[in-house]
Image 1 (cartoon, rainbow, N blue to C red):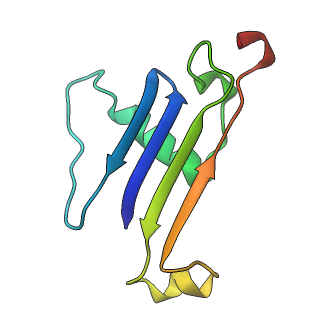
Image 2 (image 1 turned 90 degrees about the vertical axis):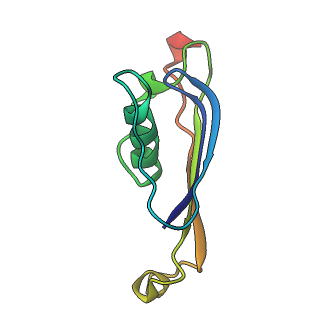
Length: 98
């Protein structure tokens, strides 16, 4: 279960920390509210290919992290993960965009 998503200098986001609790969480909002930015950041944390142009304009890099509670998933612990694990990505901006 995703428990936290932290985003810094990604797309138009300066800094954001989203803490999630047990139960269902629905991310809703109008067009342009940023739902795709949240999902894009999560995708990068999970291994999607990083596009350096997604670094916020004027910044050197973006810092993305996701924390998960996988305690109820025994198969995940077989991969060598502890009951709580984190993924972090720090893609850099193209050198001409700094």
